[in-house]
Length: 313
Length: 279
Image (cartoon, rainbow over all chains, first blue to last red; front, side):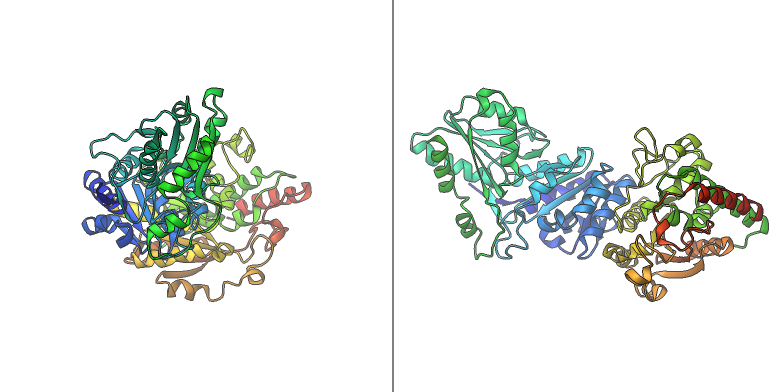
C-alpha cells in the first residue's frame, strides 16, 4: 500500500481551489512551508497573507476576509489552529457563520518529535462543541483533497485536521466523498470498528488480523465528525455483537463519544457494547518515530485487535 | 479639507441627537453602556454623517465599513442607525430584549448596518484588517474604520493586528482609539496604563494623529489626513471623556455599564436639549 502525505493534499487542493476561484484566499502563521499552504502563496501572493506567529490575529483577519466575500483558508499546526485561537474562532467566525476554513495541520500525535505542546489531543473535542462548526478528519491523501475542496463549497466555518506524516492510502482517487456520511471501508459480521483519520488504516490492518482468528470485523470511516451521521453509525452497528471506536485524539469529547451518543440514543438493536480507543485523557510526548508513539499510546492494529476481543468477551 | 461653521454646527447637532437616541435606549433603571457609547459619539457622527461612504442600503458593496471593536459601545452605532433608517425608534426601546433587533453586543444576524460580531475585546481590529485585505484584493475603494477602546488595548491581539497591518502596508484601514481614560472597573492608569500611546502606534509603523475627540473640526481633519496617507494604516488617538455630555457620569467607571435613576435621566434629557441648542 503506497504512502502519501495529507499536508501535500491540503497544499495541492488549496492551490487548485485558488486557480478555480479568485475569491479563495489563504492565511498563514509562519508555518506555510509545513502546512504547505505556501504552494498557494507562490502562485497567488496577492491573495496570501503571512500573519506571523499570531494565530489569534490570523483567525479574526480570516473572518474579515470572509466578511468581504472571500473564502478564507487559515492554517497552522492543529494545536495553534484550535485551542490557541479558540475564542477568535468562537466569536469572530462561528457566531456569524463565516466562510473561514481552518486547517489543523500536524494533528494528533503526528508531530512526533515536538512533544506535548505540539501534539493535538483536544482539537476534535473543542471544535465539535462549537455551534455552526463542521469538523473533518480525513483518512488519507485522496480524502483530504476531496474534503478541502468540499469545504470551499460548504457554507460556513469548517475545521479539518490532517496528519503530518506520509500515511497509507486507503481510499481510491475516484471515490466520492459524501459530506456528513460515514463510509463502510470493509464489511464484517461480528464487530464494527469506527475509525477516523490515519486510524482507518490501523483498523483495516486490525480487521485482517481478526479475520485470521475467525472474527469478522466491519470497518467504518468517520471522516465527517460534525455534522455527525448518527443514523449511519446506528445502521452500521445494527446486528453487530460489539463496536470499537479508534481515533488519534482524546477519548473525551471526540469521535468515540459521538458514536456512543448516537448508539445510546438509538433503538435497542443498535445499542451494542462499545469500547473507545484514543488518547486516554493525557498529553503526548516526544519520540524518535511516529510508530513509537502509536505503540506508546496503544493505537496499533494489535491494540485494536485486543480491544475488539475485550468488547466481544 | 476645511469645513464651514455650518457643517460643523450640523454635525454637532447630529451628535446631540445621537446622544438623545442613546439615553432613549436606557431609560431609568435599565442598565446600558452609557459611558463608552457617549465618549465616541462625536466620532460616530463625523463618520456616519460626513466622512464615510454610507448608503440607504446598509449592504451596498461600495460602502465604507465601521467596526466597533469595543463592541459594548454598540449603542452609539444604534443611535446612528436610527437616523440612517436602518432601525426604528421602536427598536431602540427593545434593546437587549428577546423580541428586539438590537443585541447587547454587535450582531450581524439581528441588526442591519452591523459589519461584524464583536464584544469579545481585542478582535475587531483584526477583523477590520481582514476586511481591509479583502477590499484591497477586490480593488475596492471602500475603507474600514475600527473603533478601539483604550482599555481594550490591554488585549494582546490588538498589537498583533497593529504589527500585521503595518507589515502589509494596509492604508485603507483607520483605527480610532477612544481614549476616554476609564475602563470597566477603574481608570486605565490604575488598571494598565497606556503609557506613550502615540509613540507606541508610531513605533508599530502607523501614521498616528492625536486629537480632541469631541472637537468636530479636529475629528474631520484627522479623518481626511488618514485618507491622504498612503502605504501605512492610520491610528487616530481621540482623547475623549467617558460619559461625555452627562455631567453625573463624566469620567466615572461607575457609568461604564449602569442604569440612570429618574433624576439623572431628567438631567440627561435636559443636557441633550442643551447640546442641540448650543451646537
